[in-house]
Image (cartoon, rainbow, N blue to C red; front, side, top):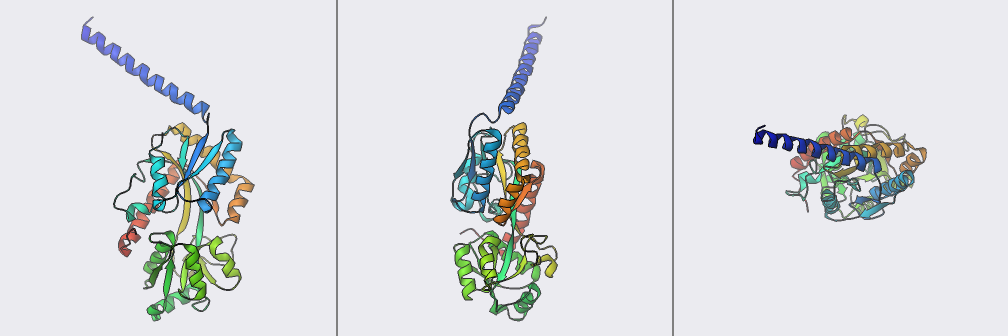
Length: 328
C-alpha cells in the first residue's frame, strides 16, 4: 500500500475519532450539567427590576437543580461592564448574563463596545418585560389626544423628563415625538427618582416612568396616567388605555430582560437552561412575584429571543440616529 495513502487513512481516522470524542465529551458535559455552582451576572446594582428577577430565577434554579446559583452584580458603563465580563467568560453554561434594556440600545449610542451584541452571545430565554407609563402633571392634559393637541398648539409649553441619556424613558419620549409629529424639549435627569420629583412639582410636564416608580403618585392624585406603552393594556391597570389605542397606532415601548450565555455554549446546555427557565416562569408564584413588581414573566425559545434582540437593535438605531442622541 502507498505510504501517502496509508498516512491519509490514518489521519482521517484520527479526525473522525477526535470528532467522536469531542461529541462524546459535550454529551457527557450536558448530561452532568450543572455539576457545580452557576453565576448570573447582572450589569446593574442590587435593588432594581433586573436584580429582583435574577434573584427569583436563581432561587428557583437552585431548587430545581440542587446547585448554588449566585447573583453577581457588576454595575457600570450603562450596563456594558457586566455584559463585557460575560462575553469573556467560558462558554460552558456556568456563567449567564441578564442584560438590561440598554443592551439593544448601546450599539447605536457607543461608537465602540468591548463586545458584539449579537455575535458574542447565545440567546437563552426572555425572562421578563414591562410597560412604561406615560404620566403628566395633572394640569397638562387628561388624555393622550389632548396632550398631542397641546404640544401642537403650544410646543414651547411642554417638556419631558428623561432619566438619563439613551435610557428607555429618553428614547420613549423621542419615539413619541416622532410618531405624534410634535416637538417637545427633553430635560435630562440622573435617574427616575429626580424625574418624578420635578414632574410632581410641575418643573416638567411629562415622563415615561416604570409602573412601580409612578403608580403611588398616580393613586395619590399628584400625577395623571395617560397611557401604557405596551401593545395591550396592563392587567394591574386595566382602566388605563394603551398609547396605541389613544391615537398613535403601532406605538410600543417595553423594557425587557433575558438570559444570554457566552457564544459557543453547547446547544444542549442552552436548551436545558431554556427549558428549566420556561418552567419556572410558568409557575403561579413566580408570575405573582413578577406581577407585584410591574413585570410580565417571559418565556419562548432561544430563536425567538435572538430575533427579538435584532428587531430591537434595528428599532432603536433608527430612533437614536434621527434624534441625534449620543452617549454621555
